[in-house]
Length: 110
Length: 110
DNA sequence: GCGAAATGCAACCCCAAGGTTGCATTTCCT
DNA sequence: AGGAAATGCAACCTTGGGGTTGCATTTCGC
Image (cartoon, rainbow over all chains, first blue to last red; front, side, top):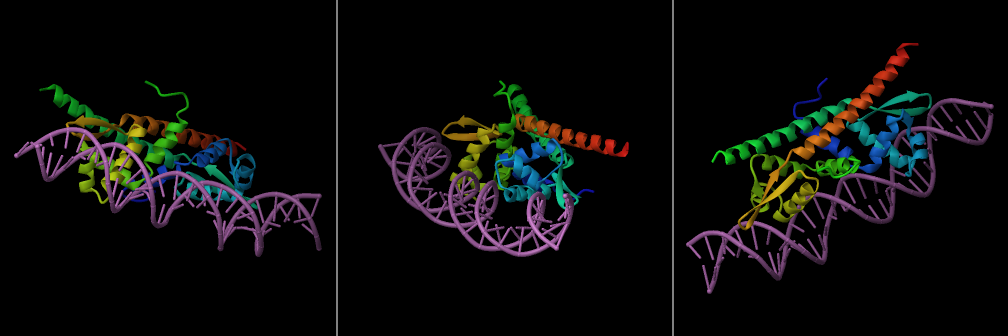
């Protein structure tokens, strides 16, 4: 189930995938329901091929999975990976703030 | 305190900032303790100017703050913003999975 | 006072990534 | 059967971002 030891590479890849507005448009569109690349292309201001590429990177990091429906390929958003990375990030942030608090505590104890 | 209504722009900016390995190197280095750009340049395989740019974008999204110490500018990691965005992402992921579960439930009820 | 260290700014290089057009192929539907 | 729709693949264009070098400026320490 777990893909490997260090999640760091995953984190960077995930953030990289989420660092594009068009990709977010696609994701939110898919949040309304599964859709094919062509269908998405009709409701977004970019080419079908561009969307196909984006769906590729989204699938790569596990944000999306594909479902064959007849001749078309439907895409579906998956939240599991996102939540996993998110929790990891939260932990890191909390850790940083914890360090900060410790320093401040020491400073005040003088 | 709050910077605005929609966090979306913030989320993209944050992800964009976290989508670079060098930036993570800087962040983890700063996790060991505050440091100046020059100091970081000594322990990382990139130029001081490159690091300065990175620190700029990190500061822009609130991952880092600066502390003047004599003639040098120390940088310090802040976890608050990161945690905030992380929780938002987690919520989004959970939402997606919730939708998924609902669909699966409907499918099984037939 | 003066050299050395820290910073700021600007011009420049290079490549990955987002986007497009074009074409070939498959597959559904009437 | 045959046309329309969906997909895949490839070549190509262009911009932004990561990185560097070079120089000017400030400021600490001796």
